[in-house]
Structures are given as C-alpha cells and as structure tokens.
Length: 194
DNA sequence: CCCTGATTCGC
DNA sequence: GCGAATCAGG
Image (cartoon, rainbow, N blue to C red; front, side, top):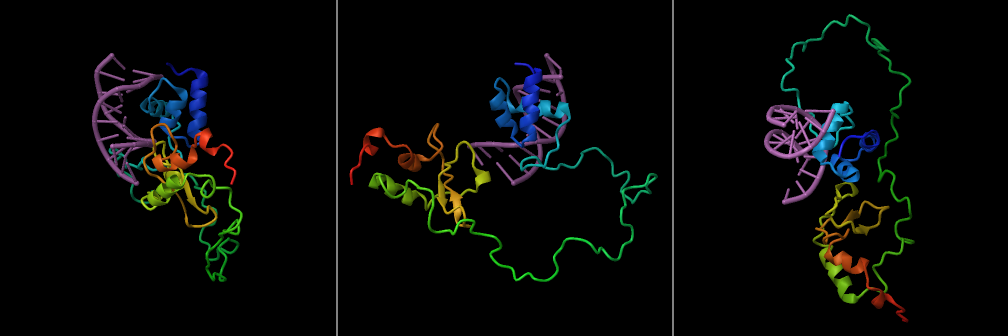
C-alpha cells in the first residue's frame, strides 16, 4: 500500500482526532503503526497534546547554547509588563467551601439504564459476575483497550464507576464472565414467562 | 504483558 | 519517501 492522497487525508484526520497510530494503521489497513508514525513525522504533524507513551524527550543534541535570558531583539508579546495588579482575571476569590464538586448528573440511585444484571440472566452467570467483579481491574474509560473487558460497573454519575478490565475473551469486548451475561443464546432468553 | 509515540537508518 | 527495528516510557 502507498500513501495515496485520501489515505494521507484519513491519517491526518484521525491523528488530529487523537487516534493512536495503531488505530489509524488498522483503519487504513496495509500499514503498520510504525508506518503511520513515520508518515506522521514526515508530514510534520507530530506534536499533539502529548499522549502517554510519547515522552517529551529532551533533544539529545541541542546544546544548552542559550540557557540564559537572551535579550530579545524583537519585541515579544509581553502584554502586561510589570503589572502589580492583575486585576481583571478569573480566579474566584474566597467562597471555596469545597465539596464533592459537581457530581450526580443523575440523582444517582434511581433510574439507571436497564443493566442486564437482575432479570432474565442465568443465576450461575450472575454469580460468576459478582464474583469476578471483585477481581476486576477497575479501569477507567481511557484505560480500556481492545483486550480489556469493557463491562461497566457502578453508577456513571458517581465516582464509584469503572470498567471490569479483565482480559477479554477472544474477539469479544468482555471477559468470559461478562460475555456470559452479555451474550445470551436466543433459546434461553426466549419467552421467560415469569 | 499490554500499550504509546520517537528515532534511526538501510532501502 | 518509506517503514522495520529499536528505543523509551506508561
């Protein structure tokens, strides 16, 4: 595969969206994440709000030539020079009784989306779930990957919310236990007349 | 071990 | 220009 215009375009788009190189590579197909990264650099669109793995990395070369406060030949922005009074600036002064800050978007407690927890799930599967949720890795949304169980636990409106994070079952988005409650054979869920 | 981006360097 | 190999880090 080569870098056709539209492939480059997609690359730019996705990179701009903060997609990882590997994700972009998969999307494009026919290239590795290395190829993507290489291209990204060649295109000069590197720096984006530094993610994780990408460490700042001090330039191995670049001598500390100008470490001292060099006199600016040109006038730098320097909007407010010596201004003892910042005056109009945000920073709300006092009232900071500090509290749970903003929380509960939803009155945390009542009408949660129908989680397949209660009804119509095989008891043994349920048992398994509550069991493994103790061993869950409790990942945050951003820590999820393609091989971490994406089963949500808890109330999203609360601090007590996380994703299972255990190793997923091949191809599935969930770990074995959660696959059990997520994907049910049509047979078992068919008319369960209470 | 999984992942991330960065760099190098032969092609 | 390209990207595998390697590196460095979470």
